[in-house]
Image (tube, rainbow, N blue to C red; front, side):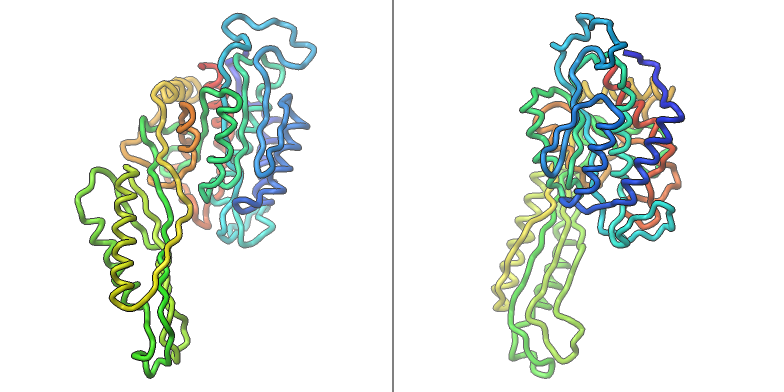
Length: 394
């Protein structure tokens, strides 16, 4: 296949238009209905990939060998025969419950939902890879996975079944990342993002009139002590990065005549080592039980947004590194520390080798998950070229 590929101006405009339309139709995790239909229609209209609907998500496929275009008649060489092991590339497509407030001409139609993590750009880039392969002989069977519900950690575990089903032996993805030069490739060998999970603790007592709190059972003291106990847990010795971030603390309401009867604490736990995160979680829950017993409360627990650690395969990250040099003319920037954000790509690498890399959005670019963020269209060509270069080098 042609390895000296550069995205044409026409194709770049087409992908930017697609990205803007995806941004306009932003949808939350598990509800990406219009997003999915838009992407499937684009691939059917503009590429040679066969599109397969899987309900909440979909994939697109092209076999190894020559293009379906009648003008492509050259037979595949032994090195690029259909016996080569299949490869996959993945993009996520869900948005976030963050207000749209940037004044963009392609602003989200839902003012309370927006693409503040760049998944519109990830999906557009994967469509760009498909577009770039038109008329090309493929060295391997290629699968493009368009995944739902990354933000909640629920999508990848479902989509990862395709890897075994189709005997896929490698998988790649990228994420845009602020704090690095625009268009530069950034990577980390081994573990690149930590395990994380959400833990909610709910205390239930009995409400009372605010003038006679002794007649009720308020959870305020237990909730406050549990919140402070988190700091104590984090000061204990641990091997790697360990965090517990309080994301919600609520006891009662602003009714000044009522002593509360319920209280809730939600914490995001994340760690370099999953066993340390699990140990922290067990200690937190045990402390909650002790506090509830002391104060005559009942306590219940729930989990959500569980993400595994994301670990890059050595051989796969080597391919990413070579591709970065070929595409950008510069070696990749190697991250010294984990990127602390959650990422469900780790569900795929539990099934087969793979790697996720990052493309810089700009050193002073707005941070992900903030109202000032929008995926930078300028890095779309680099993302497409990286995917293509990885396919060429495999």
